[in-house]
Structures are given as structure tokens and as C-alpha cells.
Amino acid sequence: MPEMTTPARFLALDALRGLTIAMMILVNTPGSWEFVYPPFMHADWHGCSPTDLVFPFFLFVVGSAMYFSLQKVSMQLSPAIALMIVRRAAIIFVLGLIFNAVLGGWEHLRIMGVLQRIALAYAIAAFIVLSLKCHHVYIIGALLLVGYWLLLVIGGSDNPFNLTHNIVVKLDVGVLGAEHMYDGKGVPFDPEGLLSTLPAVVNVLIGFELTRFLVAQQDRMKNLFMLLILGLAGITLGLLWSIWLPINKSLWTSSFVIYSAGYFCIALAVFVWLVDIKQFKWLAQPFIIYGSNSIFIYMLAPFWVHAYLFIPMQGEGGNFYSALFTWLAQVFPPAMASLVFALLHVLLFWFISLLLYRHKIFIKV
Image (cartoon, rainbow, N blue to C red; front, top):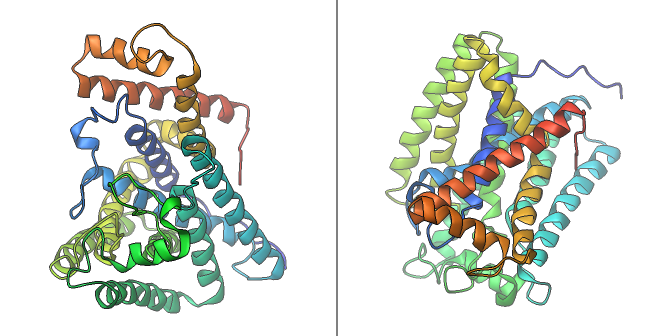
């Protein structure tokens, strides 16, 4: 099958991918988890903070990048393409396991995680869009969201959306085992669990279909207005749905998917206006550089910072990580010191991205 010419990319999409990576590093690399800068804290359970939007944004841009990747093979599913999808997903999943093992140890290895969710959501979404026509993709996306809502209600207890009695945790404990799950909430509960990955597939599908629409519609102003309309509709629908199904990132509820999609559309509209319409390409370029090796930089950041723990230093904590935060805390209040720590690393990994970009090194998985 001859390859098609890849359609012209939107700089706005590439720039938004880079901003998302920068935000992921910003919220995942505080100087101290005891003194997280308040705006960068996740909602404790129900609700949605700006930080809660970062991961779904990344899944949206995964879907966007997937559109351009699959266009190269004419959107045709073949054994070779199926193998490519499975291989790519497997690599990302294994990288996630290595990530968890380095940070948490092999004995009670956490099986799921951010990269694992990206891998599964990408693979499932890729097979959906390659196997079905466009309008059927919409139907499957709607069925996934409504079906997941019903599973939560039917499979839970009298309070199906609480921490300990929802069907998500029941399935994960049964399949993964409590000792291989995240326990940061005081009980075994994985915010990137197996069942809750199903609605996350819709994030990828939305990113894919939005990109398909934007590329097909060359009138940038029409794109802008459509994105704004979709954004407002998504936020409104998500809030209305939350009356019956709370917006909850940890459960990745269907209302959260729609709500976060609304904000993604508005963010993308802003970038379309600034970059593709007003032609402020100088604004896009730093973010394009940041997104050029997105998975690699996302993986590198926590490993790099974790290595600080093994650099001996005098003083409290006895390592470079503690020493650096202690020094910053002498200059700034603790929460601000934690923010400065994160910002310094956002800048550091941008320079690493720039070095790779200038040498035309693009590490793909």
C-alpha cells in the first residue's frame, strides 16, 4: 500500500503538546511533596483542579499525533501496522514498569501507571480508528463513556463513587493484587487502573477526531469558532453530567473526560489564534522544541531527579535533592521554594530538548 503524503500540521497542535509536557514536569517535580505549591495540587477526590487537566491533555495530544502517524499508512489496518501498534504500546508499557521499579522497587512492583495507561489507551484507540468509519468512532466513544458510567453504578456499593467500594478498585485488586497497586491514598487504589483506562481511550479518540476535523477544514477562523463552541459545550455538559456522575480524575469518570475535553478545545483555540492565525510563531517554537521528544523527556525527568538522592551532600537529608530544596527554602517560603525547584527543572529539560532538537535527534518509541 503506497504511503500518503502527511497533511500539513498545525503548529498550534505541536505547541500545545510541548506545553503539556512542560506542565507534566512542573506538577510532577516539586521540591518537596510536603510543600506543593497549592495551585499544582490534585483534587483530593471529587472535583477538578488545573493540575488534574494535565494528564488528559497529554492523552488528547497522543490522539492528535496518532492521526498524523496513521495518515502515513493511509489509515489502513494491516498485519504490519497492527504489529507496529502492539510493539509501540508494549515498549511504552515496559518503560512504565521500569519507571515504577526504579522509583518503588521490584518486590511490590506497581503494574499500572501513567505510561501504562498511555500505552493501553493508544493501542485501543488506534485499532478503533483503523477498523471503523468516522461516525462509528463517535458511537464507540459514546458507548465507552455511558457503559463505564453504568459499570460504576451497577458494580459499586450504595456509594459507588467512593474510594474503597467502587468497581474500579474491586477489579484492580482482583486482577493486579493489592500489593501491586498505588497506595498513596492510604489504601490500595490505582488512579491509572485497568477499568478506568477504558474512558481514557475516549480522550485519545477525541484528540484524533479533533485533529481530523482541523486538518480537513482549512479555514482557521472556522476552526477557532468551532473549538470555542465545542469547548464551552464540553465544560457545560461535563458540569451537568456531574450532577449524577461526579467529575473525578482518580476514577477517570466519563463526566471528567467530557469536562477536560472542553478545556482542551479552549486551550487549542487559544493556540490556533496565537500561532496559526496571528502567526506568533516565535511563541510556538519553544513549545514545539519541548514536544519534539515528548515521551523521552517525560521519562528522563523523574529518573534525573531521583538520581539526586544518590549524590551525597552534607546537611539535612544527606543528598543533593534535600540540599537543593533546603537552599531554595532559605530564600523562598517552602511552597514557593517547591515551585522554583520545579520551574528550574522545566527549564533544564527544555535545554536538553533544545540540544536534541538542534542535533535532529528524535527519540521515538
